[in-house]
Structure formats: structure tokens, C-alpha cells
Length: 148
Image (cartoon, rainbow, N blue to C red; front, side):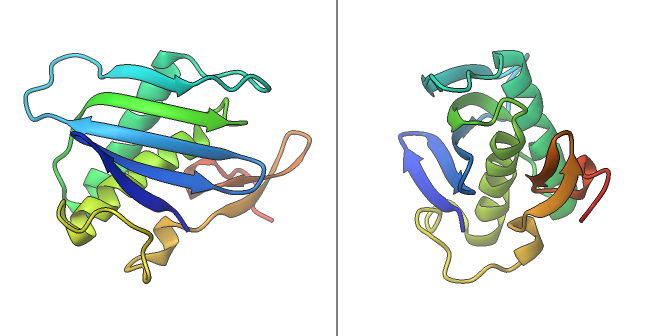
């Protein structure tokens, strides 16, 4: 289950799956032109980090999916992240999606915490899919080519 936090103007989600983890904080702006700024909070010394462009693309795609699903209107102006073993940005995208889902579900005032219930459990579910080198966990069907 994810946990949610606030840091100044940023809304954050932390996701831990065991072999991987990600913390993503997003600051939203209605009048943002151009891509969001990306800041790595801590380097992943063991596996390396994705590029800023990959992080921004993953977050933007996840926010677009959440906007389509929930009818919300969010645009990231700034992204802060740290990840462990997430070079393909799957957990980074998942955390960004969860930030928007949480904002829609409970609003800004009740954002912080670990949910005791989940209105849409599928938004938190991992799927095990066959991948290169064996089964891999993904959080959405879009990335699954062979579900196990």
C-alpha cells in the first residue's frame, strides 16, 4: 500500500514493492509552459537513475492516464523523485498516478497518510507479467505483454 506525504507545495507518494521502491513528489501549476523541472532527491548508487527526460515522460503519461480516468485536471510543474531499481520508471509513473488518484479521492486537506481503504483497488494493484529474464511486476496493463 502506498503512503502519501506533503512537502511544501509538493504532493508525494511512496511505493515499495520489495525489490524496488520510488518516492515521487509533484508540484502542480495551471499555467505551466514546457516540460516540468525534474530533481533527483537521492542517487541510486547500485542500479543508476533514469534520465530527467524519462522521468518527465513517465510522470506525464501517468498523469494523463489519471486525468482520463478521473476527469481531473492536473499538470506537473515540478517533479522530485528518488528510486531504487526503477530504471524503466514503472514505479515512478505508478506513484505519479497515485498522487492524482489520491487528490481526486480525498482532496488536498486529507492527502497525507496511508489509506485505510482504497476506493479503486485496481489503481494500486501490481500485475505479474512475463518479461525479459523472467516474471516482472508492473502496475498497469499497458506494460504487460504476457500476463502470468
